[in-house]
Length: 526
Image (cartoon, rainbow, N blue to C red; front, side):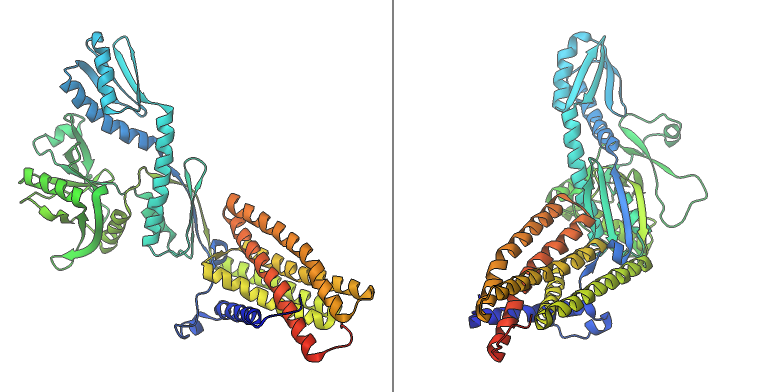
């Protein structure tokens, strides 16, 4: 236990030096960090929402909109299927959670079931007295809910990453809720606006042959839908312009591969877009077959532009023009790149943590940690003298290694994380206390100096290892089963356990062995 090969000495010294070098940037101001050479690590630890300030949002996925959209798609498909199968019906309509119509010939019930199965296998059908009602089965609803929430989390993550926010927390809460924490966000209103937009874009033909006035009074032709025009430049004083478009979607925005804000005609903000191979083929076919017709670009059930198709547009690239501002064009491009949400998101809870509050938390946590470290250092010196100083030096490198590990892993430090650091500092010297007390017992038992040191480290090792492994297991369980602040505490606690084991067993022992070989004392000053 008291023999150190040269390679092990070099390893211990190298690890301590590297830990100190990586940890130092956390104690330096940003002005100094920016002037350091590139080969020196200068990435400080990321601060969490409670320390840095930022925005906390709890979002809910509108599952009723998911079911309603799918029913709308099934409605068009069912109308076509019933017509192709020559099935007589009246009053085909969709509701919030069901489709229904009246069957003119009850003997065609089996044909109706076959037609519904072709349209959507997840629809349960009930026929009573010629009335046909179709609803989604529970298994289909549960699967759709799971898929919608998972997809929403991914889209939310893409949108937030596009804004440049570092270390966001995005996770599922319950069945249909999403927790979003954005440290350091200075404009939470802009982020809420980006997250609140579904950003579902479609290309549909305008029905110029129908009477718009009749449509505004409720006489909408079958297969059409009345949508408002959108104007981003200013609030309009007059009534919103309406436009009648075909319900059929010619090209969907989910085939977009890129969208970028740009300018045309000098200073007019527009958005350029590009489709993948499938979308490019559909877009080219749609424009080729509908030359001289108007093509509506629909975003979240609002028409943002309805240009006339002058000629076929091959290649899958185009320009979206409209009444855009520079910011709205940039936002639209961001939303289209990130993808459309499968359903609208509703903000259930919102909290904003100011940077002043975060600074107060850092100051309070730092003060508590400094006071704790000072008390530990004084305690070890008073009770164990020179060996207490060895333990204090090991404690310093233990702290450096903890901060270095947090920096390298890119972990986010939260207020509970500071509590975990303070706790592990106490645990680090606790291992030294066990070793030193064991050495004292061996000396009282009449052992020699070398034998007491050997037995002290060897016999205390089992106890130290058991206590650290037990704590590490608890930290791992908190990390995998907990969330938010619990995970932050678990990370610092687990890292602290590993670094304290290294410092107590190797760093302290190396100091004692080095002192022993150089001074060759007659007694142990403990």
